[in-house]
Structure formats: C-alpha cells, structure tokens
Image (cartoon, rainbow, N blue to C red):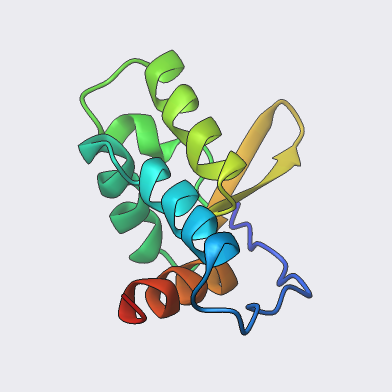
Amino acid sequence: MEHTCLPTAETPLPLLEGVEADRELAKLAKALAHPVRVQIVRILARRTSCVCGELVDELPLAQSTVSQHLKVLKEAGLVRGSIDGPRVCYCLSPPALDRLKLLVSAL
C-alpha cells in the first residue's frame, strides 16, 4: 500500500540572520550531523511516497537504531511521520528542507 504525507501549512520564516536564525540553523544542522541521518534524508528524497518499513531494509542497522535517527530528524522538523495501524510512515518535510537551504545560503 502506498502512503503519501499530507502537505502542511508551514511557510518558511523570512528571518535569515540574527540569533533566532542562527539557533534554527544550528538545530537543523545538528539533526543532519550524523552520516546515517543524511543517508535517511537522501533515501526519503528519492521517494514519491512515504516510507514505512523499507528504511531498515536499505540501511545496515537495527530497527531501533533507525527509529532513533528518525526521531532526531522528526524533532528537528526535517521529517514527518504518520501512523498507519501498527507502523509509522515517514517522509521529508519540504518546507523544512527549503528553510535549511535558505539559512545555509545566507551564511
């Protein structure tokens, strides 16, 4: 069964410099500061639908380790998750990725 993440009403904030922007960039960068989390973002970026259990099949890690990395990405807002019965399906948050790109380009 194919799942899609519903778009959110998030819009990137215009603030690209200052203390708040620096904190926001640091939070997003910290979430991507592990190679496995970067790999997860790349995997999700290649998908047109949500990923439920397939991430564990693509990574040489235990389910619990993948779940912990997904938790970090979700807390930073880079990944969204939706519950489908006993499992959670994940996809990228395009507004968060766009915001990250803007903040980095403003350095």
